[in-house]
Image (cartoon, rainbow, N blue to C red; front, side, top):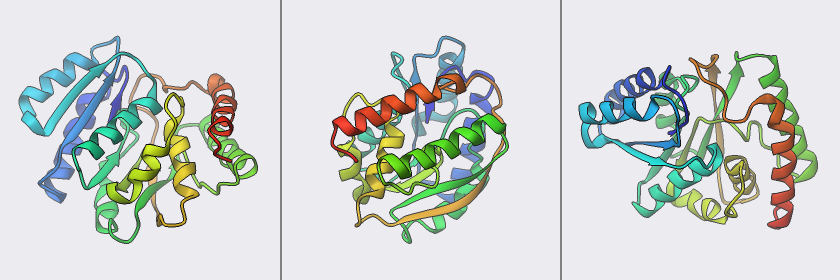
Length: 227
């Protein structure tokens, strides 16, 4: 769970996910990567880690951006031989109510994406539409929603693609979706999810910066030979 300036949402998000994971799994570990937050996010996380104990691990680092923080979490899970990686965001848009359906289908597919019904505004819907079509045209990848922050991965099956993401790609979670899509051995699945507005804070990539970040991503993918 990457976290950046989510003081308005983070406690509710952590508590709601603990409740669902406890009832669904019992054996789990939440890794919250605090990506250089400048508000009270770190203090809230540290307080919650005392309450929840070792199942809530906090890593605080300087700001690297959402995608790089996700990749850091993936690599740590691979190194620890965690069998399944669930990526979620910390802003309250990743509703844990859908997780049991993901978990029931964990052996049917190697990676399961949430297929969003976006309720967070026309601009975000438009950004997803543009990204999907640019990926189709420029890198020949049919990714329904390459930027969705709700995904469950079989670590062993997805590790080669995770490790193939070139270092330094800002939107590396999108790059990973492209690499996974181009691997014929990876089985992809989708589960419909609602996607409400954020509980607070601001998106890690504001809408007005999205186009620039997108073109930067395509340049980086081309340089890395991913096309």
